[in-house]
Length: 295
Length: 313
Image 1 (cartoon, one colour):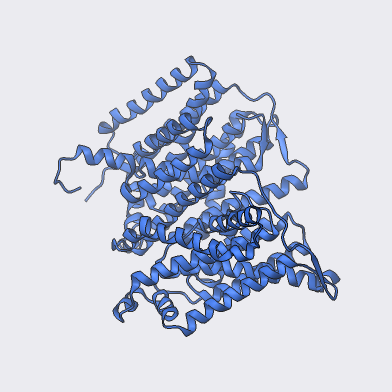
Image 2: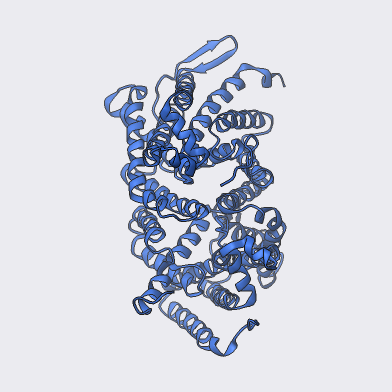
């Protein structure tokens, strides 16, 4: 019981929570502004992970310095997909449920293609590299450098994005689009530009998260799926399209996961994750924190 | 206005074509040797699964991404009771168990709509998978060996029969009053309910019915490999393949899943053994292409070509 109160679990939960919050934020931006359900979101982390891996092993450069390039790559992918697949869907005037259902199928196709292109290019074998893995001690708590860095960068990104959303005109136009699409258009917001920025931002942040994950964990072409699921759990708990709810829910899920696994066994992790997922969807599809929203 | 329950006269050609086609493929598969027997078996398996999926998801528009759960439950029941209960009993029981499971979860699950429903079905299938995996490892049974299973030919007869039954069910339901009710749910559920269509009852019935044949198929396919593994029979790829085939073939028409299964199996035959990754890449691209440019699938393309230009469908 004493181990539950130790700082070790708290630190693990904070690191995981920071990552979940960051990953879910990207998913939320894309859903909130365009109603696209990106089930390829975890695959963006995978791409980010490979980016960091190659950056480190080929150039010897710190993967942290490679993060902007990685973010640019995944953001570029988002922009390409927007023009290739989704722009036509969004302007077709189809009802929203149909856009949502189609986006799910389209992103599923994207996911399958991405995973297998990476597997074809770099083989399906898991890879890992060692970076910043020296252990630091703070009192009783042992932390590796890469996890401290992951937490710090995740928090920095979160704070930066929140500031942009709240303090800048452009950030507020993103929020306006999330709140009400038609009204946003009427008050003169350039919907097209906001959508493009949101998908670039959402995808870019996912790439950064993937780079952070790869510093501490193995990467493989099929690593993305659990992250996709976790981020869906988070954004549904926080209320679909509710950016701040999603951040809180990200930390909440991480704390539940870390502490429940510590209390039971590692085998329970998946049952727990999917159990929460199913329970939230059945009992409160509008999320724990969100209000029922009108679509 | 009365809608005839089933118009039997006009359906005779379709029924006989289905049966004759299936008998021909079975005969061809068996005479051409063991490799083609397996190809025929896979073809009928996918047809049966996709037709069953189409019975619920194609007709109601509630896209299920968790259809593998029925397959897995059937496989699990047959594997656990192997050598304890004869197969002619355990396989229908597997179908029944899958149907019962669907019936039990139907009420809470079917209240959830749209994209929530899609990801919920997926999550539910994964939850069942991990619970069974946990149970199996706790009892030290992470995989079960199944020796003395029936020959592939025998399995082929069963699976082909189920594929024919599934096709005919989709065909007849599509033409029945029940099917019209399901189509009404797809078009506008609230409006359907308002004019007195018993939407909940129809949805629950179709949801449970669409799980029975996949349960039996799961049980039969568990006999195909000599060992049983939870992760294998609950593999989400099975659900995804079903949806992909239904989209490529075209849902809502009994011919769609057959075309989809033929298409996917043809692609798999060409690439699976030589370039499995390329196979998945092409499958993903085809899925994207069909969603964007031919949302009614191959069957929609064929129907469009048959129609004279300028006519309104």
